[in-house]
Amino acid sequence: MRFEEIPGLLALKETLVLSHQRNHLAHAQLFSGQEGGAALPLAIAYATYLLCEYKESADACGSCLTCQKMTKHIHPDVHYFFPSAKPEKEDGKQQSRVNEVWRELIIEQPYAALGDLISALDTENKQNQISKAEAKKIVQTVSMKSFEGGLKILIIWYPEKMNGAAANAILKVLEEPPENTLYLMVTYHYEDLLTTIISRLQLVTVPSFSEDEMMEYLVKNQDATAEDAIKAYRFSNGSLPNAVAELKECNEDELHWFIDWMRNCIGAKYDFLSRMSEQFKQISRAKQQIKMRWALEMIRNAILVKEAEDLISSQGAERVFILKFSNAINLQGLELIYKDLSETLYYLERHAHPQMAQLALSIRLSHIIRTHRG
Image (tube, rainbow, N blue to C red; front, side):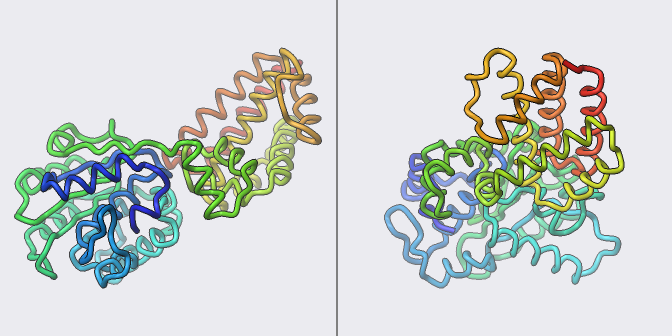
């Protein structure tokens, strides 16, 4: 990963490069951004630049042996730590499998979130965290000599998932690391980090992608039209994977899914709703969130139509359904549906069990719809 592969954020990239060129490299840095944003790719690109054998003025060369190792995430002096479920039995094979799944995921989806890793490892029903045992590995890694004689970098993904014992175990090495050791932590929920950890880190705030930055990326790298890129950005909530997933989804399919969902809620067909929740679990987390945002947009338009039809731009079958749905349910009911959808999306973004979350939502919506007829 190189800086040039990451859309926009030019000022922040320049700041990171200058920190090296001016020898102002903080030994422990916290990259704080939103899931689906550039925090992890930026940390990896920064590590690549620092280790590159033939640095360019503002980026790694991309062709030296070090850059090639970084592309495959196999550099011996770059160590990755991330949340995972405790294995049923401790053995090297299990940990090797977890590390390989992580490596493949980040190669394929550099903007991935923890939910993607949990899905890949099939550990949704387990507690995924950075345990005290992992913290001990961090301490051991810090005490080791660099394999290639230069900088040793520890990239810690989701440090907010450290339990108290794990956080306390690394405090000393975090504050007083050996020479040529660099910590790059990547967080998406800064407020959940322990203050004892935060106080030992230099904060690097990673902004969300702007509309122009994301649109340019989608048009250039995903062959999107400008119109489709705008629509994808609207449903992405600033997440690049969400935007890419939205591009690949057919809007007509989303409409049919939403209509079927609402009809089953209206008819209180709980057997069908249960099947829908099972199917919902099978799709990627990015697509789950897109469906929730699509539903929110539909309900938002149904609320707007209560005021005036010309307030919405939807056309065709989508517009017809919105008008019918708005007429069928009173304003209070629509507002309650919008509130429940928003809350469910919030929990899905924080790795709630998708099948349970969607089924519970369906049951609540069925009750709201049947008790708030227009």
